[in-house]
Image 1 (cartoon, chains in turn orange, purple):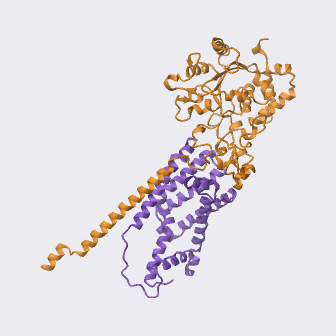
Image 2 (cartoon, each protein chain N blue to C red):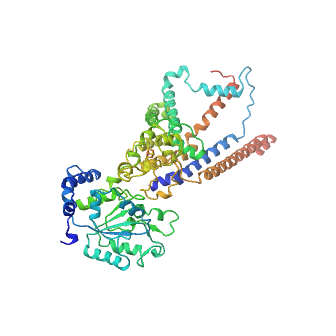
Length: 367
Length: 219
Ligand code: SF4
């Protein structure tokens, strides 16, 4: 039996994973993906049957934080095993080969799994000046992306850079960075945003695609509803403090120590869709708000350019409001003065005309 | 979320600038107008203009006995939505933060749920005000588009705010953006429509009181 002929079921048996454990995992995936409980059996059955899925991982303008995050997902879990089970045919950080051999691995995977392989991308793609700001093996990211996705089954973007442009796309965006999602128009694209994304959001989505062979329900930004269907604020354990109006005013005041809401110190939880508050990080240990810092909104487009991480959501993001308002007050005063001057002139003219008899009247009197 | 960025950034700045421009313009133009010298001799024993003006301001805060049955609803309902609007604007934590961002000043907030309840009462009160206006033949006769539009532009931020708070009808960020944009519309309309009464009502009542007192009219 070749490597790609191996089924996940056989692999799990080889590793001593029971059917019950697989079923348990399938139930978790079903619950996470908001499927009925009955779907768990189908997922378990289909997962057991799946063959090694070829995955080509393209890294563009990125910091490798997304890969770091995924390699530090819960361990050792069934999810890990499934994730390890995929055939990662090309990945800069994780592959052993380099240079021409690496590029050859990508080309071979594309040829052998035409129409079936999944392309995972992290990082944004520079488009300015012909895309020269990031090249791999002498080719621009743009070129590599178009060639690789041409015969892919689907594209999964990992991280906010790939999904929405992220930090390279932040103003003034010197490289003309674009999101993968905005460049790939003819393939289904699943965005798993976050800086970095929650690892379980990625492994859960891949398990879903592998077992059910279809794309999960996505929100208007192309993110799986199962992980991005609710805001951090909706599921935040500090929410009762928000409703009661108990806010930390700084990161070290009494309110912060009491665990009050972080809205005043800039939390973007109310407008951020992600699974941090439910799935959490590091085996469910904590998430930023639990650790005392407001949500930065890292899974949303342009989170870097939203007027400052520590500025409350309710405050205006414009730094020029004071200038506009000051200018408007001066202009208003000027307009008012002009209006009164005109009124005064009119009044003086009216008084003057009333004081002097009209010429024709004078004439008629004389007559 | 682009709409929210637009609302929180340029839209609110420009709206505030128009609000300040219009308000300062109207106030300077009003106070700078040439004064009409009252040539009449003041009735002996009548209070001075300041006392008379202040008295008139307070007197008009409650209906006269003769008209109490007729106008009590307007008075009470007016108090309900005016106080409601004041609580919503000045006692809701996110609004205080918005004002703090503009002025640097801040004060304690009421619990959100209290403000939501006040918001709901204010909406009901504003709807009652409209129904009263439409069903009263006299009020209907003297009402213009300015009145109806001012009513609408006042109601809009309250309704959109409640919708945003309860995530009703769309995603929170969209509702929040619509709420901020509705506030922008209110700010832009404010100095040019009937809402300007917020700045002028006490001035006009005081002036009327002083004018009438000089002629010996007593209530
Ligand atoms: S800390 Fe942030 S997410 Fe949590 S309740 Fe406060 S504003 Fe909402």
